[in-house]
Length: 161
Image (tube, rainbow, N blue to C red; front, top):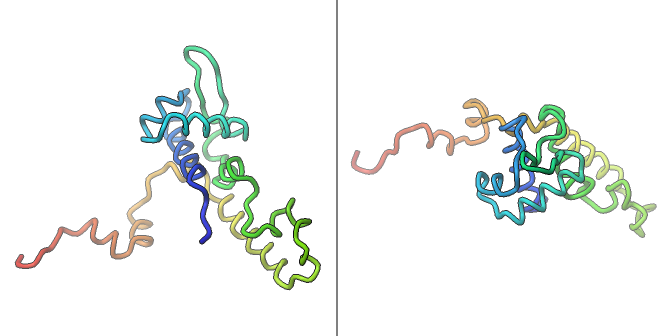
């Protein structure tokens, strides 16, 4: 299974929350309460996202964290990279890890993995934080949900009715 880590998932949740409230400074306790995540986790993630250049932090009474740039200019790929490092499906396809593979010079699929990585990275770079913060439209929900989306819009039918 290919998946991002739980902390990265939470980091995307935090970033979309902040994108939904632009221009406001957010503290860890407030964001934790509104996203239903533990304060220590939120605090750690906010610090990592600030180190990654995606959040700006300000100390003081009116301090807190806010997006370092407009949500339209921050990609999902940037968030993942800030929290997990370079996006790569295999160790040899990460730009800085290829020297670790003893089979690199003989590998017949290495170039294909690089192509797949570029496609995935490109897809994630093509999705902005602003898009992630926006609610999904009914057309898209129907396309991804199929029967599940139909169940949400149709009344519940039980036996005998």
